[in-house]
Picture 1 (tube, rainbow, N blue to C red):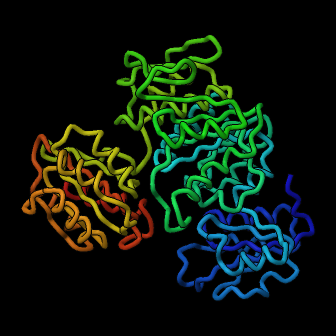
Picture 2: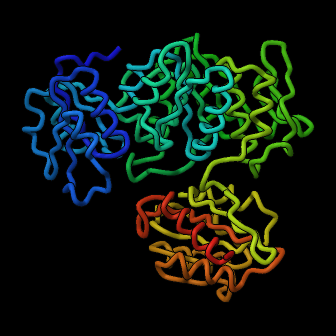
Picture 3: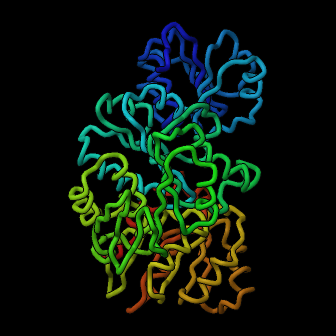
Length: 457
């Protein structure tokens, strides 16, 4: 277990994880904890009253190397890349640099079930959390889901478990993170700007199971080439799941039933049409979560109960309202094209799509090909508007069905309401980050929902 007593700790990066780990370090007996952020305090959108109350020192603005003087350990927030000069200087001085996830792992007294992947993490983790709580009522659920993992690890205590959503960012500064059950859902191009290449991005995903042993389990998506190939580098027992093929062992769809076959036992869980969560990708998420829960010790009858009850997560193909026979869905969590493609595939066409935002500059060919096939009207917002329009036109999408509304979600919703009629569906699935207009995808999704509900009233 990580020992903070009498240590001097520097935490880099104000945020949900950074703030929490600074408080935890102080409460675990560190002599001095400094929380530093390169931004000025007034530019940060966090209330730091409770951080100050625990005796953590706060330092804002340019991060000089003197911050490292007499420091025993540096802890990074997920948003802070290891390439920044301050972190590089820490490495030079041979000061240990760890992530908040690493701290959570060191503090955890119960096994960790960790989920990563480009898409589907939050739905899978939320569902897995519900599944594991049927066996361990105190199970912690945290990580990239917006809840600090170090706090959840402490809260779970002994004789329980911790369910973690892990992003590639969080893996950069981990050393010996070892989940008992690791799940990799898929790998598609994303966060290449941060990691420099798809290869490095994939390496960060693989780092999650690199420390496993034969006593651990690695749950992999058989239908994704990159994840299927990871089995070659697995040190734990590989458990595949597949929506498309019946497997000798693992979890799969057979005659419309979610099925687990493992070590000579076959269990039917529930029919795919009994799931409340929409779309083929959610069948994959359900198979992945059920697999991890089964390996983590949840009982099959309880797994079946939860699978049938789980209604999904906010901002992921979330039903908002039906107005004049037109259903409105919030999929603000689709911050990349792959995620938006999955949303489009969940509906039988006749979509009025609101897309655009802070452009990740990924290739749009597959996305716009599907837009041409399934989208009746395309409403574009934010920074990505011009590039999205150009790509749609290039693939033959009719210009008269493209509507640019600038930087206004209100205009986008108004336009959708004006042009949509049954049997159409209005879908916000931006295929972009949100930072050109909002603090995050949650703020974008909530704004969309408020605007739709205002129409309803």
